[in-house]
Length: 236
Image (cartoon, rainbow, N blue to C red; front, top):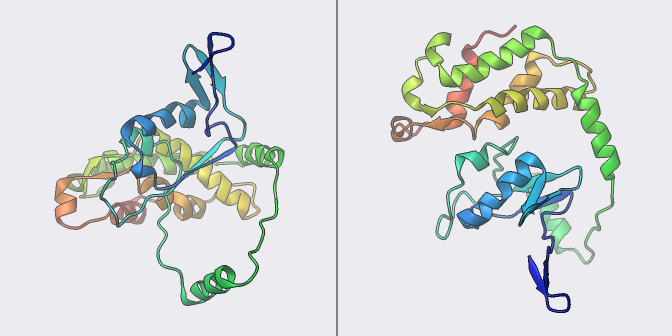
């Protein structure tokens, strides 16, 4: 809220969240208070300023980066905030060919200018189509089994309960289903297969399976635990 000297009233000044795409670069450098401000925006697609709630524009997408090496001056992200990100991708060093492409692109005389390829209406239309992709009842049960295996591994003959401090949340079930639908959509299919679930499952679950101290002592990674679940749970 900004004070207007002419009128003597406080008026809202909308910040950078009021956009279609938000890029939070090195989000773990933001203090906890700033990070918590994203919780309502990411879940409810709205921002409350004072006693008034303002809807965010649709579509509303949040992308964030984290530097895995530099830890000084960073803050750990709360699990509640991490859980609101649909996917977590790990980006490694580029290949030799990619490195050469980067060199040619960034050291030449002219920079390539980005060109629009979509407008917000087309993105919203694609989201509606993705929702219509068919998911068989057996695939839905398979997705639930995958998520439940992170919480009750013994039910699925997995001896990994000592490695998991907290299993995946119900958001994992929802996002795994939507992500599998989107993967099938990208592949040009109107139905989801188990391979769609497996292809996107690691990106959905790696940040939602919280490892125990024992797992960290054994230098286990969430990816290794999730892979054991995918290798063990029966595929329909």
